[in-house]
Image 1 (cartoon, rainbow, N blue to C red):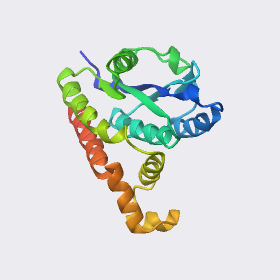
Image 2 (image 1 turned 90 degrees about the horizontal axis):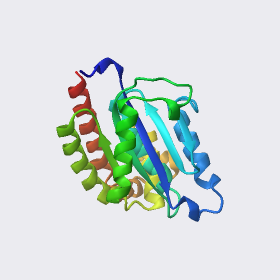
Image 3 (image 1 turned 45 degrees about the vertical axis):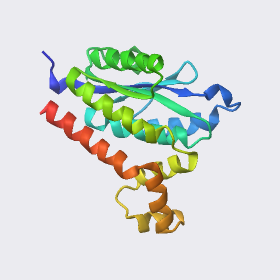
Image 4 (image 1 turned 120 degrees about the vertical axis):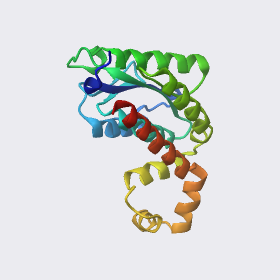
Amino acid sequence: MTDIYSMTSVITGDIINSRGKNDPSIWLHPLKELLGEWGKSPKTWEIFRGDSFQLEISNPQDALLAAIRIKACIKSIDKLDVRIGIGIGEKSYNASRITESNGPAFIHSGETFEELKKQKQRLSIKSPWPELDEELNLMFRLASIALDRWTPATAQLVAISIANSGLSQKELGDRIERTQSTISEGQKRAHYEEVMALEEFYRKCITKTLA
């Protein structure tokens, strides 16, 4: 029986086309800065094998938003993208390094990440609830039609919009010295409203399932 009180989520990912960048700090520094918002390395997150990473999000409801933010961060850099496998489950072994911790959450994350590479997809989830996984993964595949086509400028706007989600389009435009119409058009190109609706739906599904 799954203990919902010990549930966590783990993101396993890698950077696509990272070897085409002569200077890895172009993506490494912003990724480290973003991952640092969720905790310290190597306990909460770690970058390994050059372009792979793992991150624990202790509240599974927050995992998709974290994945979207990582996607926006990496796609802000020309010709780069990211594969992300989200795993939800228990954490049975808590090590000083995330890559040495273990449990169903880590296994699920690793398994769905490996499936991504085989299926040539870039976002998926595996949890203790197969029916929920099937529903969410269908939505993720549909959402990826938009996510995978973000340009660097669009991805930057998504990252800024999420980081300043409490601001109106006008307030956001004032902060980054753009017009409200420019913000509106950019968010439409990114399908920002639909992406955030998916994030809210995911959050509600996980919250209901854990309740």
